[in-house]
Figure 1 (cartoon, rainbow, N blue to C red):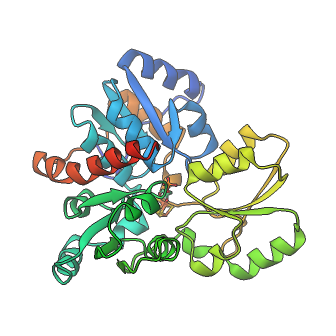
Figure 2 (figure 1 turned 60 degrees about the vertical axis):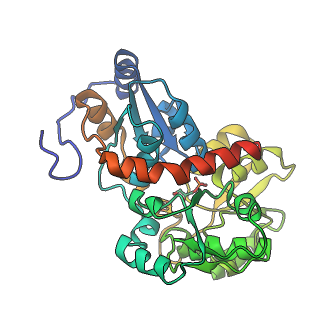
Length: 325
Ligand code: 13P
Ligand code: SF4
């Protein structure tokens, strides 16, 4: 099958009801769709589970399906495969990467690690499997602070690849982790100037921010957390208006859970009205339909990489369970 473009280019009959067809394919193939909150609303609506990076990893690990179609980005599908290697993992578009994962090439990171030989390596899940294999423990935005605090205060740590999340953890925990200089192109794009203007126009709105944002943006947040934490906060809060500083996909679930509340996507530093992740948004219903139907593209990883990258992710899941996450 021709995967030259990174996805299957098969014509689809425009008369097909893709929601129905995808539901049928899932049933006949014992397949599930795991979707990240940053997926478009229609994809979230066909998913069997929608979640943040930690929730998706936990679901993948315990799945009894024959196929997982991962509607997210490449490193998330890799994490699912690493945790449940016997399952066939499909990705609708192989081009769905991540600027943060790209900001941490394996050779350079190996040198960085070697230059800090007396440090342990804590790595944000937004990285390649090769980087995970070089790490001691993986973290997500849900458990990062607790995992860092589980180590003695004098433990030397290098943290990669997100310098913004790393700086936020250093601030909250009073640690001095050595940070890799990587970042997420989406969360770095929020405009401080536009945020201040929107805040002045919506004085009763609460500001919700993901810790991948830069420090000067985070200073304006009433609450900082992972996508799941932001969603839960918006459900429980009595406030009626929220300014959301993360990828806009999450607003679909926020609005579904709280239909009477108003969610304002914070604008980026360009002419766009809101901030979409170009990688997450490569997935479409059409690509998902073709991927499930023809079972291509499939994520293939070597046994060696699967084994080497598993241990640090398992450590994270074990610690998360201990924390009740
Ligand atoms: P969480 O899913 O952990 O909130 O992280 C967001 C993200 O950037 C995923 O790419
Ligand atoms: Fe990567 Fe940022 Fe997109 Fe998340 S939002 S997948 S960190 S580029």
